[in-house]
Length: 290
Image (cartoon, rainbow, N blue to C red; front, side):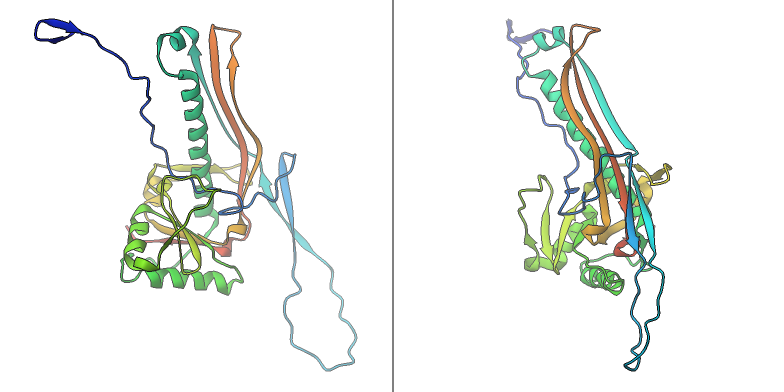
């Protein structure tokens, strides 16, 4: 459609600057919010967990040993969550626009893969963690008490709570409750557009994955588990020991590949990963009633 100023046809141009696409915040970071120490070159990793001898009452000195059989259990973590994206970019398209179309779509694939994996990790925590019995609605007045009570439950199980994933609503409540006690944190390993801070000895993440639709992951039996957006919307926070969330990768690929079928390139990414909460009692899921 021609654009006129008075009676003169004026030029039209398309910007060479691409408007950024919005993605969820980054929070799934090995060594910070999860562990990748069980990564192996295999289709699955089975982690040994010994059966502890536990504490016992003392006896009088000079007693014989009582022998028990050494035993362990196996925790399966399967590389059974695959995410792949492939976009066709014709050279005719690339030559007709002023921006790097292939690179932009590859970048989008990378971010979409990250979003998908994070949603799966959140679904894993929700499904395999332990739901708290307290469903009190969170307010600025009771937020600190809710967090301390959740930390107490994890401590009773011998865990160390050091990560809190907050819904955007609860994160705002924390900011109101903590005030100047809340310390913003900058970590070079965390690339995020959201907010990260420390309070009560724990690192808090604003996780907008809670508000980004359904979340799906495949568990260690190969079953696809879906956590609906309605259920995610009822979560205030998930508090856990970062050591108990395993996120292991078998493959993480991105490439621009010349196509043999058409004149152009394919922007492709693929991630194959596994998720597991290895100690359920050290991951507390705080929900409120609908």
